[in-house]
Figure 1 (cartoon, rainbow, N blue to C red):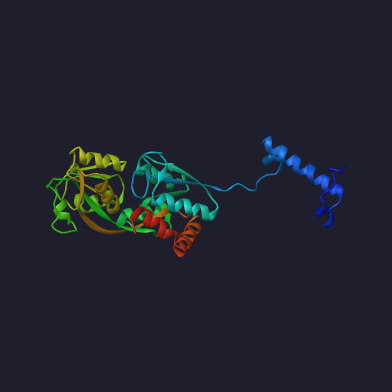
Figure 2: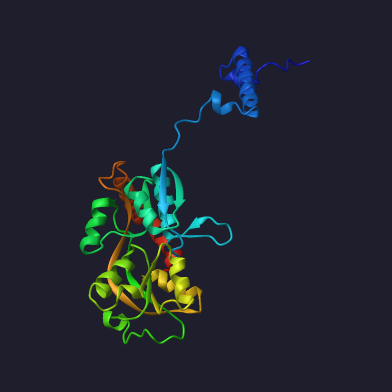
Length: 291
């Protein structure tokens, strides 16, 4: 009868002794046993854990950020971009969805989150822009946007003669905006401060769903919101239409606390640059905005 404990001929030819072969078999058996008991990671640790980076956003703001209506998972352009940036930097990305825009801004400023990814305008004009610059540092720009004038389909109170709406055409009409957004500041600067619309005719809400609902309920005559968001709402709801646009040339960027205490901006910018170079940025952009 052959000796079942003997090493195979191939092992002998390679210079492996019978003793070494037996030891190897025993070690493999121990590893398998530890794995079955769930002790493998303890005895043979898998290396250093990925750094956790907390991302703050404010939904819904489709197509940049929203919750999937079926799964409830976060999705959108900003979500895909940050997840890819995290992958390229070896981060464990954790998302927090804030119900109010101003709560998100406060969380970024006071480091309740590490990065803000929520269609944040990095080039607000005037005092508002300076306040943002004093509170945040911004990544490179990843999208340029204008404002969209949204009305209820079939209404005629607000009418723009051309594609571009003027402040005079929008004056003295009730309007809803999202609190402390670029839309809010445009209405304040160009209508309220310019004495074209009294402050009593302006309603602001912490989330964009409430803004849209106010329009649908007839509480206001028009809504100002970022152009791609206005277009998305009009495309998915036949009760809404885009009456016109306002050119603001807003630059979206990812935001961190002032002075970038975790030195995240160079890592974000580096990943964005590599994504543009290898085509990943275009693929993600086309997925959510169309080619």
